[in-house]
Amino acid sequence: MSFSVPDFRRKWSCRGYMSAGAAMVTAALGLSVVLAERAEARKYPAPFDIFNLGTPRPRAAVHAAKKIPLPKPRPDEAPKASSDEARPEADGKPSPDNKPSPDKPTADKPAEAAPPPEKQVSACRLALTEEIAIAPSIPDIRGPGACGGEDLVRLEAIVLPDKRKVAVKPAAILRCTMASAIADWVRKDMVPLATGLGSTISDLDNFDSFECRGRNRVVGAMLSEHGKANALDVRAIKLANGQSIGFTDRTMSRDVRERVLHSVCARFSTVLGPGSDWYHEDHIHLDLAQRRNDYRICQWNVWDPLPQIAPLLPAERPEEAPPREVAAKPEAKDGSDDAAAEKSPAPSDKRASDDNKAKPHKPATKKRR
Image 1: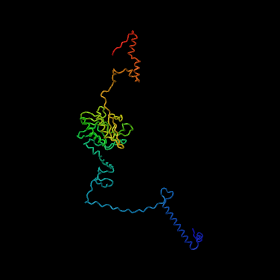
Image 2 (image 1 turned 45 degrees about the vertical axis):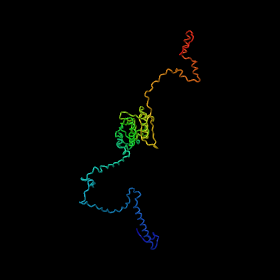
Image 3 (image 1 turned 180 degrees about the horizontal axis):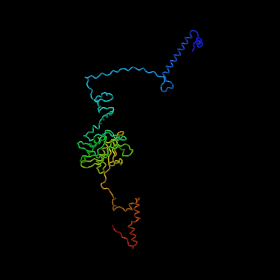
């Protein structure tokens, strides 16, 4: 490639001493544009470089790692570490002197769950002492459909004020509040009743207590208070002299049964007995169901005692009774019955007239009666 002044003047339109300066400025601008494009191309990869293998990106400056000072060695006069403290393991293996403690969690043995906090004792449980009833606490029951409850006890016996015990047969599973109400009822109401009969209470006949079921054992019915351990079915109380006071026994004195009725209706929110429905004809249902405005239900009909001798056959017809044909006729007005009686002779008169027709006629004579 040759270079000459005429060619230079023909290519560049500038003349004079300014033509050389203009060429240098043009070259500098072109070089700056090329350098700027290369710098911009380093920031972004090529359009078709999907694996980012194009122009290498500038690496961040690597700072020199600082030296971390090591801890000072343990002095000889320092006390030795206790065996309970964990020691560092060398090369990933536990040292023979540092055996894993069975009480502490390790990599192979996971940490055990913390024990649940102790449940606070209820006020009813504190009040229901052994001087009132033998009722040990039992664990909470969580059944299907909110069946069960909390603060449950097994009522085994009721302790009377004179330290005698009334056995609950069989033992009843109840809430503490229900068990306390049963104990108060027996101690304060049934003991005076038995004393009036000349004896003391020995047993309480438990017909049913806790049972996870619907009302009256009907499928699909609402949960019964028995399913909440908040009800007790009682049939009778037995006395020490062998006598039994059946609450639905019609041979029992009506006055005794009415006293029981008034006592239970004053203490429990629900009382069901004979007359309420045919499910409670042979026992008494007691519970402490909570209702709006403290509404209570007391449905128990104290039936009268049965007669001693039931009339099986109708009484004999008295001799002075009128004939059945006459008694069966409706009463007539204005003495029409008397007229009909005169017109229609009695069957005996008809027989007599027939006999008179057959025999020869004789004058009739009247007889005095």
